Amino acid sequence: MRVAINALFWNQPATGSGQYVRRLVAHLVPLFPDLEVLLVAPRGQSIHRAPQQAQIVSTSGTARNGLSKLRYEQRTYVRAATDWSADLLHVPYFAPPRWTARPTVVTIHDLIPLLLRGYRGGPLVRAYTAWVSAAARRADRVLTDSRAAARDIVAHLGIPEERVQVIYLAADPSFRPVSREADVELAAVRERLHLPEQYLLYLGGFDRRKQVPELLAAYAHAGLAAEWPLVVAGRLPSSDSAFSPDPRPIARALGIQDAVQFTGWVDEADKPALYRGARAFVFPSIYEGFGLPVLEALACGTPVIACHGSSLEEVAGPGGLLVDATDSEALADAMRQLVLDDRLRESLSRAGLAHARQFTWDATASQTARAYREVLDGRS
Image 1 (tube, rainbow, N blue to C red):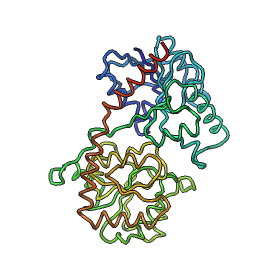
Image 2 (image 1 turned 90 degrees about the vertical axis):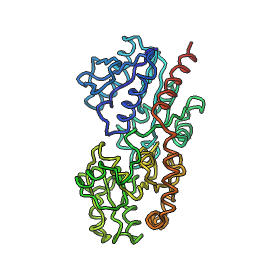
Image 3 (image 1 turned 60 degrees about the vertical axis):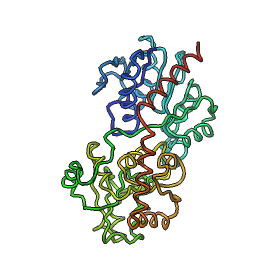
Image 4 (image 1 turned 45 degrees about the vertical axis):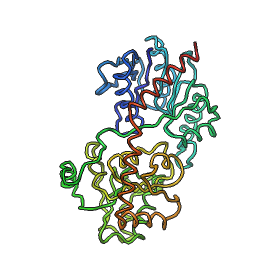
């Protein structure tokens, strides 16, 4: 079986789609040597660190702007897959081709552009979303990361349940527990990032659905600033806006600027130690298709505070304290509980570790390969 995978996001490992396609292919190739993987990329885009067994296919067209990207997704990628006699196309993000005779699988991680008003963009973005939504309805199989995302896809795209399949993601093996005494990585990261000895952690983006202003307000209300600093990690907004509010003036207005440390961008290699050093990981996002940071924290033995709704209930499982997304007092109380109650923290840590071990990239790859075969068998 020869599968042509759209590798447009391959060189963007900081994005969810980039991480997904890289890790999926890295596990598909060794597990299924009879599976020929073609990584199809626009002209001028190299494919960094691809598995040796994967075949790199450079197309005749580029994807440098909106129009050329659409042309690549809808025509050039399909033509290249056809020229290379691919049996099946897999688009690992929400942009399947609308017309192709080849069987098609698309992975839709979430429906944020459809469900959240502030993420819908201008007329061109909305037109693009409508186009790929129509294309997704023609796909032979839609893969998605959680049961919550699957419900949204069925409800809002009108795709029959039998064509939607949940395949969970996983944390990288580097996210693992290490005893504090033996954690040389933590010591190095603490020194490099000037981290306090004990802290609560947020790591993620700053767009409005992440609710960082609400996190800061709840932290201020919790009364923990004197002994438990809050580390806020991630690339800060370049400017203050309604879509991505700068959290620094908010912290100053709340009077907690001395207790909140903004690290800025954090290298992937430093994230496991950053999670391990935290008393708790606080992630009050109102919507996620999966929520990989939550699973990464649990895999490091760090309990999580997250919000009800979307996928986070599935991902956090028994390792999380879940609160209502609009309840600031509940969020503050959850932080106080995990700081003050050692037994609760240890219980959540053990349960979270056991839960996180159920998610593996081998399982993700195996289920994806099975989906490919089912689609091909259904077409034969």
